[in-house]
Image 1 (cartoon, rainbow, N blue to C red):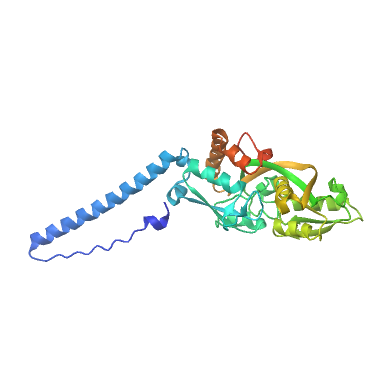
Image 2 (image 1 turned 45 degrees about the vertical axis):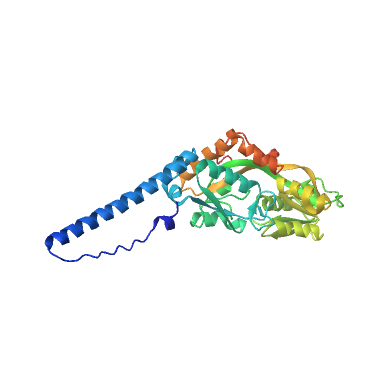
Amino acid sequence: MTASTTRRSTAAKSRIAAVGAIAVAGALLLTACGDQTEKDSSEDTSTKKADKSASAAPLFDKLPKKYQDAGVIKVGSDIAYAPMEFMDKNNKPAGVDIDIANALGKVLGVEFKFESGTFDQLILNLNSNRQDVAISSMTDTKERQEGASKDAKGGADFVNYFQAGSAILVQKGNPKGIETLDDLCGLSVAAQRGTANEDLLKGQQKKCGKKKIKEFISDQDTDSITQLQTKRADAVITDFPVALYNELEAGGGKLFEVVGEQIEAAPYGIAVSKKNPELRDALKEAVQAIIDDGSYAEVLKKWKAESGAIEKATINAGK
């Protein structure tokens, strides 16, 4: 229940005829009784609504009261990362992360409301209270936990819910014969800014010596894919489920292919402010709940993302 629904203006209009002291006293008594009745009624309604949410959602009482009252958890996300999060044909958020959030909402009794933003600003937005959490295929790393990463000012805690590594996506037929990161030296390679994939590209750049990689670093992963499609880039380093999705779906499966093995698989995490441990712990319980009740597996099967499944929810498992 949001603050706007609890703020109800009441315009009490008293029409008291001052006909003697007894009439005045009677009118005052009736007014007082009327105020008390209205207050009690409002409190009863609030209690009933909270009780209804609690009974329908087994983990409702685990949430801080702020979210119980609001009925909403605001989520920051870079919604341009199919199949994890993207805008569907109706311009609504869809994907693995959105469906997982919806499943979490059912056991917690609140709505997860997604707001799109630039990936490398998500933790900053979180720590400046613009959103409550960030769910955006974000790899949990020690640097992000501690705020040492350039995209993680202030740091965050991570509730781990999925696991994925990076992959190399190339044009169909692999015209450059790319199989490993070492094969990228001397080629044009795209990656998204502020991601583990950019870090992987920068790390490989240092190993290439004089045979430098021409880097295309963009704010959205879709821009990286466009660079590959238009042949300005020879390869894209992106997350494995995203690379696989593009191999299977883009151009009816005729445009791209994934080469080599999945690279450095690591946990994804729901980012939560370090100042909000109660919400973090409630989310951990909720992730475990949807794993146990099977709804988590249903989401991954729907999006062909079973390879990223985990069996146990954790906090800050990234290294």
